[in-house]
Length: 316
Image 1 (spheres, helix red, strand yellow):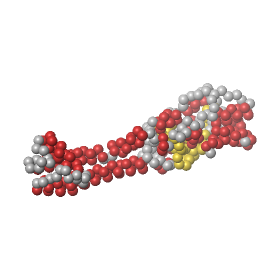
Image 2 (cartoon, helix red, strand yellow):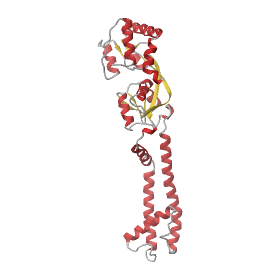
Image 3 (cartoon, rainbow, N blue to C red):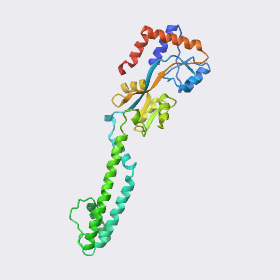
Image 4 (cartoon, rainbow, N blue to C red):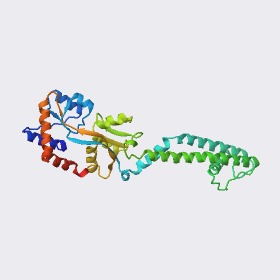
């Protein structure tokens, strides 16, 4: 095992003349349970110090002061299909389906009316129903859109009167249809911009269960997509199933600089202060004090800064 806290704990143990054996568990709850049962003495691994956790377990002095951050895909990493999906979601997530129905019904009604009015005396509209309705449908669409090629025109008085009415009504229907498309795409574009915490509501945000990010999002009224490991959140973001990931800044910054380089980025400032600590039993005050003294000694000697810079220097 390696990492900032692993290196720090090993150095504290060496400073105190202790040995360390590290094993992995799946959840923070399992860590707390093992400590309570005496299976483990210390719990580590990016565990944020929170009020509910303080009620269940004791913590050392903070090992790291940081905050939450937001990770999103880089603009250039969005695949063509993802862009098409954005367009389709804008279309079907609005009133456009209903407008399409109105558009189709209006065109069909207009086609039948103009065919009925013109079929007996106008060669532009065939008398047989099948061909005639197709001619009329074509006329209805080009007239509605104000294209008006002129290859098919109404010749009778009633037909021309209806053509004037249809141009007026058709222009309104067609304008409403195109305006709805433009509006939906504009709203979707605004929704797609996440530049900081204020932009999170209304988006699909992934975070880890029982984390500072989870507490923050639920407090904000954002129902997060909950995962039990931050790696799962990375997968959801890569697959386009969420818009962003909110989690502890050092973890996301490390992923951005390593595995996610060029595909994801962090946006906005750090927010919601987070402190990491080592978990110890509430009954083992002596061990907690030894850890605290060892940590203070490392800070004063400069050893803490060396470990910190080794892991986080590249990310500021």
